[in-house]
Length: 81
Image (cartoon, rainbow, N blue to C red; front, side, top):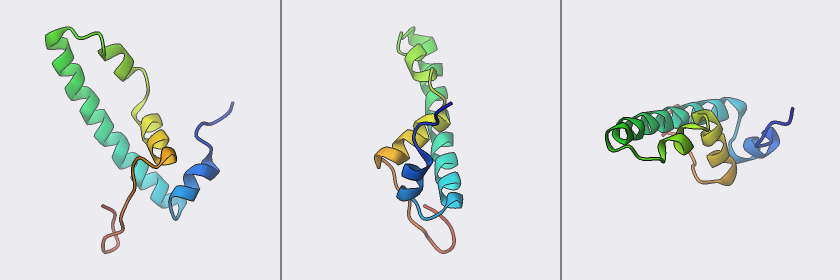
C-alpha cells in the first residue's frame, strides 16, 4: 500500500513529526466541523454536493493541504497558531 502524500514531503513542510501531527489534527477537526455544517445545510436543501464532500476523510484532506502548501503554521509561545 502506498501512502499519499509521501511522509518525506510532509516532513519537509514542517519542523518535526510532532508538529505535523498537531497541525494535521487541528486542520482535520476544522474540515470535519465544516463538512458537518455543510452536510446539515445540504440535508435541508437536498444538494447533490454532499456525496463528493464526505467521500474523503478529513485527515486525508488536511495532509493533502499541508503537502501542497495551502496551509501553514506559526509557533506562538510554545504553542501553534
